[in-house]
Length: 235
Image 1: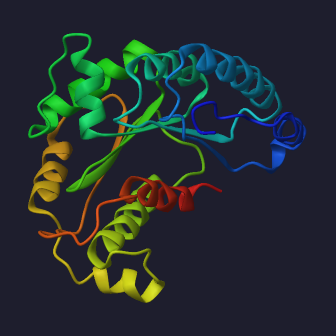
Image 2 (image 1 turned 45 degrees about the horizontal axis):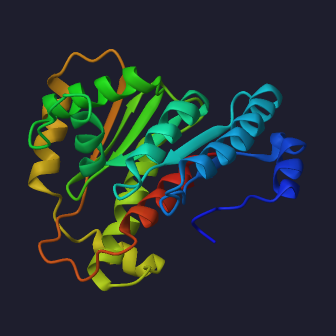
């Protein structure tokens, strides 16, 4: 069923008439779609849906999460058509590098300056308003200033929840998340944080170093766990 990702009309009907109840809206899960015709059908539905919701409630947060292993053609369609409606596009380092390489833009993830240049290139190409970049060493928001949102809190919670899952091999309780705070911060993340303060940037940039974990016990589902944590900051 994931290859066609059907969306019930009753879902659209409900949210099109209850847009004032939305704090944040996450679109994800298209990574199994490989047929571009099916993706085009879904995008026609979604774009009409988001047009309706944006008119009714211009301020709700729309968060679009990608995936590294997505069909490149499908991903290109997704970015080009949904980016104009999204406040935030979530990505990791591998996705950023791959998305830019297709257009001849090389991104060195060991250099914050290069990462920022890569983000600027991707945002300009697709008309993206803001990006949340998540890595093992840090997470960062880069883009337009978000209204009524403590994005630093969201990044911190995302780091903590995904780091705890990596540390113990399951979703963590509050106590297990607190235990993760005893770990040191990533040296790379700290270095990037210091470098960010030196850069003259026109966009808002917030970077939170992750807790350093040399030998993670579990790596599956960390991106989804991170995104869940980020969504705690939307009101």
